[in-house]
Length: 160
Image (cartoon, rainbow, N blue to C red; front, top):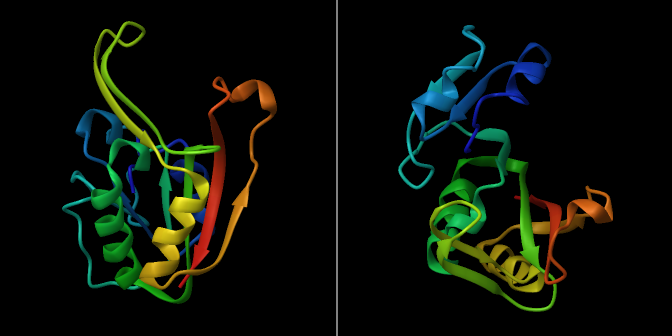
């Protein structure tokens, strides 16, 4: 979900049976390899739905763009699309002690910006309530990659 330009997908597709890449922006997805092993869906992850059951669903650098209610709905939808014992991997920035909400004009980006960096414990509670289990946070970046002292990048792995 939110496959972007396919940098990761383009390195993985030969090692798996098939990848469904969901990317809202067609200008990003045009860099994804053209192969029968990859299907590209230019849709918002809130709109995408498949009757397929997946072994793995990844959502990298995307979930902070959704508030708590939207995130919960996304996690519920993708729970239904996972096979039993399937895994959801969320790579994202999370609040370290509490939720961190950024809303307004960003001088750095020169545009309005919204982000909800949910507290790690809250994200875990949301996932547990849906039915995910074996939830683990992995510290994946060196300290210098975490710009702010109230948020931290993690890869969260949850199992159905």
